[in-house]
Amino acid sequence: VSQRPLPAIDGADAPFWQALRRREVRLQQCSGCGSFRFPASRLCPHCREEESRWAAVEPTGVIETWCVFHKAYFEGFEVPYTVIQVRLDSGVRLFSNPVGVAADALQIGMAVEAVFDDLTPEVTLLKFRPKVSVASTGE
Amino acid sequence: MSTMPVAVVGVGNTTYGSLPQHDAYGLGSWALKEAVADAGISFDDIDGLIVNRIPDYQRFCECAGMDPSYVTTTPGHGRFCGICIETAAALIRAGMATTIALVYGNDGRSAGARYGGAGDAYGSGGGGNWVAYGMTSPGAFHALMIRRHMELFGTTADQLGTVSKTFRNHAALNPNAVKRAPFTLEQYHASRFIAEPLHLLDYCLINDGGVAMILTTAERARDLRQPPVYLRGYGMATALSGSSFPPEDFWREPMRRAATRSFEMAGAGREDMSSLLIYDNFTPTVLFSLEGFGYCGVGESGPFVAEGRLALGGRYPTNTSGGHLSESYMQGWALNLEGVRQIRGACGERQVRDCRFVHYMTAAPVVTSIIYGGAPS
Image (cartoon, rainbow over the protein chains, first blue to last red):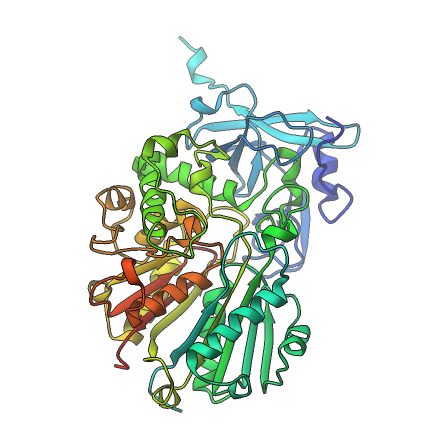
């Protein structure tokens, strides 16, 4: 696992990576129009406002698509492994890995929730598992 | 300013494959010398130069002994082929230069260029946040896109395989193609997955080579050796906002805009096209292009290609050279040469009969569309 490529956690996105350590998803939010963005940028791409803050968002979203890697591009990965594209409820898109669901059970629009995966003492990854449906436990 | 279209008057290329004895400068010089000879001009007639993927314009000019009035260099991204051609046409029309050479040299195979993974310089831009999840490579990006297309529209692997198989059959008729042995759909399915649902045979080749084109005014073109091939229409559009992720519309909106502009400029429509050249870095882009440029309806590209329309003898023979999938990975340039040669009627066994218009198109965050024709209007 230690040979896995690691993200740069000390750059402009440091608040995002620090928040994952605390089991939170925090994204850069425009002080002008309120839209969220990731990775960090000086201007809001929607309204070009420069002021922003890092705000906690719901750690939930939907799967937009996925693919399965059979070629080992990096050390520290066992193939095959699955990459998902998630659109958070805040509108921000992320690439990630699914937890607890096989690739052939994935569906476009599947609701997912965050799983915080401590990769190293410094780096926590944001992964996703199918959201447990509250309604289905009723009857 | 002339109202006559700009013309392609010379084309040249190297052999393609593994050429470890040549660097990008040597490959570009080789191709340019071929193009100069093809046009029947001299190096000194060239007053504009755009190099692509060749690292340094200065060293290239030094190697070729050139002092053009206008010079620039462009990055080795496939989308820049169309940008270079359209920019050259605009420069000529604006009077900035009369005769422009476009020179491409790619030593990527021998130099070990990576398209994914730790040493990747292509297609994973801004991807540093995603490597920890194993996300990398242009191929995986297209795998994500076609998976969604499959889920939304029922597109199948057989349909992708048909695209690859069709272009390979074309390459079998092209003596300069790198991969010429035909394969069956069964062999397609048996080729290994790279980023599933894409198989190895959905991916373009990685090979060395060089390509050059010479463009000039229609007036000057009349006196040169080859029958001019005119840039009858061209257009560009981008979808760069949010482009770290696949576009929800498979780039249909920018393709629609570029198509409209180029068809209007050409005074011709889809029904007038004799042959298509589609930037085929991966088989899915062929499907996305057919939908975006309006050759079929949204979500209908799978059945459209499965019915044989892209094959020689079909309604829209496409990538008659074999394309990036089977001829050569010249990032759009070799496809444009094929268009010029088809209009000239110089394609031998793979010649499209009565070839009047050829349409080159790309599906990417930068969309380009170029329509070549044998008549100036």
